Every structure is written in C-alpha cells, then in structure tokens.
Length: 409
Ligand code: GDD
Ligand code: MN
Image (cartoon, rainbow, N blue to C red):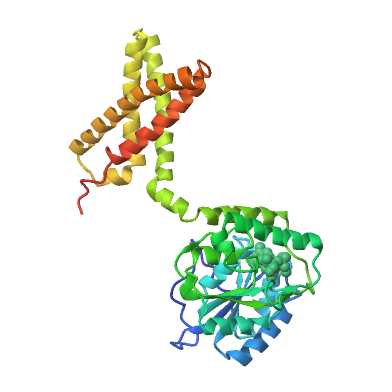
C-alpha cells in the first residue's frame, strides 16, 4: 500500500500566493477548491471527517478539489493516521508542522500550498457539519468573495453550550464590535472557524493572525467585497476535546488590537520610522557614556574646568553619535551619498542640529522645572527634556542631515 509523502512546510511570512500552485495532474485549469483541516490531537476524528468530506465533494466537484490536513505534530500522531489514509483518499495531502503551532497560522500555511481558486477551512472534530460546505461553495461560485457558516443567522445555533460559554462567545463579539467594528461588524458570526474565501480576495497581503480567529484576519487584511452567510448548528464533539483555553481569549484581545491598528501603524511607520528611531535612541544612549567618560578624563585627569570639559565632552559625544548614525541608523541613506565631502556636510548639519538640541534641552528643563512642576522634579524635567530633544534631533536630522537628495540613480 503506497501513501503520499508529507507536504513541504512553507516558511517566511504568512502570505497566500495570488496565483494557485500547479495541479499535480498537469491539468492547466486551476483546481476549484482547496479545503484546509487544521488538527491537533484529532486522531479519533480524522477518518470520519475525511470520509464525509470526500463523499460530499466527489458528488459535487469530482476531481476538482483537494483536502489539506495541517497537523502541528500532535502527540497522538494525528498526522501519521492521516498520512496512512492518503492511500484511500487521493485528494488528501498532509502537512506535519514541527516548528510552528497555532490554529490560524496552520490554516494559512495550508492555503500557501493549496492549488485551488477557492480556499476553505473546517474543524476536524465534526462540530462543523460537513454538509454545509456545499452551500458555502455554491455561494462563492455564485459570486461571493467570502462565504461564512454562521451560528447567528436563520438555521444557525449551538447544540449544547453552557450559559457561560454562550456569554463569553457573545461578549467577545460585542467587544470586537466596539474595538474593531469595521472588521467584526461585517459578519454575524465573526468567531466562526468555518468559511471559505476566493483566493483573489486574500492573495498577497501578509497575514498576522493571533490565536484562533482566522476569519477576522481574512476580513481585516483581505479585499473582501460580497459576503454570504449560511446558518449552521455547532455540534457537540464526538471524540477528543476542545483546545480552547483562557489563552485564546487573551490572544483574541491581542488580535483585535492588531487589526485595529493595522494600516494605522503601517501609515505611522511610513510617517515615523520607529525602527530607525530606536536605533537613533541606542546611539544617543551610547553618546551619554562617551560624554561621561570624556568629561571625567578632561576634568579629573587633565584638570580642565567644568565648562570647557563639558563642551569637549559634548562635542566628542556628538562626533560619536554621528559616526554611529552614519554607519548604522542611516547607513542605507549614507550609502547613496558617498565621499568625504558629503559626509562632512552631513556632520556639520548633524552638529548644528544637536547644538540646537542642546539649547532646546536647557530651555525645556527650565520650562518643566520652573513652570510645569513649580520648582520640583528636577530629574524628571531633565528626562522629559532629553526625550523631546531626542525626537527633535531624530526628526530634523532625518529630514535634513540624511535627506535622500543626492542619491545617484
Ligand atoms: N494545526 C493546529 N494547531 N490545529 C489546531 C490547533 C493548533 O494549535 N488548535 C486547535 N486546532 C484544531 C483542532 O484540532 C480542531 O480541528 C480545530 O482546530 C478547532 O479546535 P477546537 O479546539 O475544537 O475549537 P472549538 O471547537 O473550541 O472552537 C471552534 O469553533 C468555534 C466556533 O465556530 C473553533 O473553530 C473556533 O475558532 C470557533 O470560534
Ligand atoms: Mn471543536
């Protein structure tokens, strides 16, 4: 009995390819449908769900679909059970992840190797009734970008959920509507783990899910136009147990925050390069040590007076910061402005701006100490002044000293 080898595991960003992978049978037509089944300790459910799915899809789109089971190295060897079943289910392909873990990323890794134009996801534990799949598929074939199985539309519901679980599920939804209405408000069951989407609607953007709620990621980062919803009743588990813990609830909050700030952080990043600022800050910090060391050498060893020692120390620190910023913080820009003349120009600008910063520092510390804090909190005033001047130094130097002007094409 031969069974197919495990799927290669994609690495790098969670990004669904815009164009589907080639079909194994050499047919130039892309496969119609790829269904991902994420599993963790589902060895007791695998055979049942595969039999039901294959039966349904063979009747609806024969030879035009694939099942991709993505297992995170389950202790109960779910991946092995599934791999052995590939002999009976030619449409089945199995991925065993050993480095990564998590439902949402498992689904996207599955979509990354998929060959279908329509990408779906269903749980392996038969709590999502497979027969609903055909209605979802039909909705996408009829034009919807996304078709979601919902517990909160006509014909939908949950079988035997405790009041607490119902409250938590609805509570999470309400919280989502407050924090991220543009995403959570687009569907009646944003927590649903049972849906399918057109590849063209999610291909391209980097996904960045957290926890279980892959649907939110699809709506939040995809180009989702028309959405269809089909009612279904969430069934009781036949075998195994839910992997949901309090951790999924915390991850859900983190995911909402991420989605809420998507685009804004991106825009902010474009407007204010945070990573470069952090480097600038680290260099600035090194300058403090240089300043202190030179102040010590000049005043203690060479016996110079405080003011002259401080001026020399300050200048050496500025030189230090310039060299590091030119070689690290703004290396990419400096690369385009080669030659000692250009460098000297940058140094002069940097020096002038930092001296301006020094004056601002003195003004600000006096403002906070004397006016804001009424002659209290000297060191806090100094800290605030340093922080504000660091942003000033960074921004003005970014705009003036390392301005992208003389880069040769
Ligand atoms: N690969 C992988 N990695 N699969 C996982 C992981 C993981 O870390 N954790 C869970 N799974 C698989 C399970 O094996 C199962 O097939 C599916 O993901 C859902 O996990 P459950 O633990 O059974 O979730 P649930 O039943 O409590 O909640 C489900 O239904 C809710 C209502 O629709 C999930 O789909 C939720 O996302 C959904 O909100
Ligand atoms: Mn389940």
